[in-house]
Image (cartoon, rainbow, N blue to C red; front, side):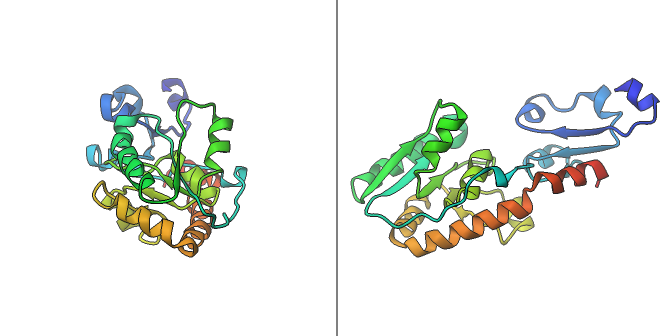
Length: 216
């Protein structure tokens, strides 16, 4: 990086995942950066001088389809980290609903990506997470595939994107929101169409790459 800086090259740093939360900046690298970015909203609380960009995503790689309303509503959840996703509380709600409604729980865990996507494609509703970190790639895949997606969102994200397509949930409201979606298939179709359009427009990797290369 020092050699590149000495040659007059522009250096851009993008902080992703949990590395910034646990370690912070790598000072010798950070000091050389012409622009610094993050895809994580909570990282802005640790360093408000970072520029936020949405996660670059290729929605065109995922097939969109509208799901026909059937007798059984399939609800998916795909935890990479159960504690971070609030999975135990999500699964407790789903198991309670399973006794009251005609639903099927599709738990997608520890699967190769192609198998995970095949299972996700069977879902009518997807629950991403309840917690403080906002939505992840799992949610973007679900939106791109036309699956109404429930997740907890940060206030900063909602302020920046008030027209987002997510079904907002907290631990206390998850059951109520799921019941609404189960009972209203037309609303599921509306969320599905809005979700695909939104993720293709706002998370487009080419658009975000241009923002990063441009240095904001």
